[in-house]
Length: 140
Image 1: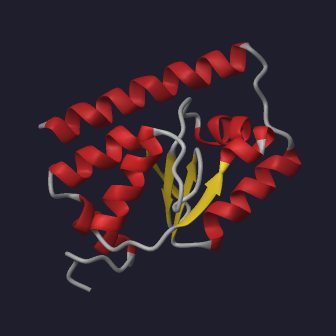
Image 2: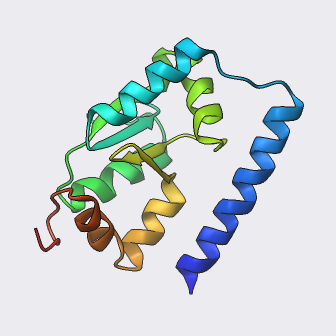
Image 3: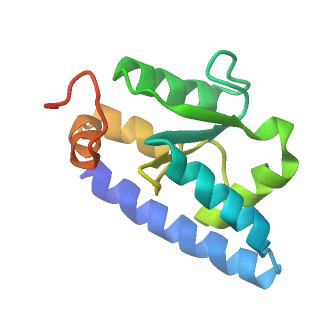
């Protein structure tokens, strides 16, 4: 039930954000779109975060790292604090206004709240299994 509510909230926020971005002319250059597209498809799990895996620079990024570490999921981090264009670009690319952002096999999963919800609901291992991503509690 909580997962359904999270998905509904996710859809509403995403549509509100994309409407606001379109109204504000928040486009994304072809170059930046290609860069982000390459990044999210290069590794199985990608996290755009504030800071790094070794030194998360905000609590939300830290929580995403802790959930992925708990499940022994290897991920590639991208520190958006060192690249303001990337920081704003991923928000437009995903139509999601906040950082961190988690991608699995090129698909945008969500931010900290979604990942924590999947973890608490016991859904994260099945999700990762279905995507073919090794994890501590998965069946693969």
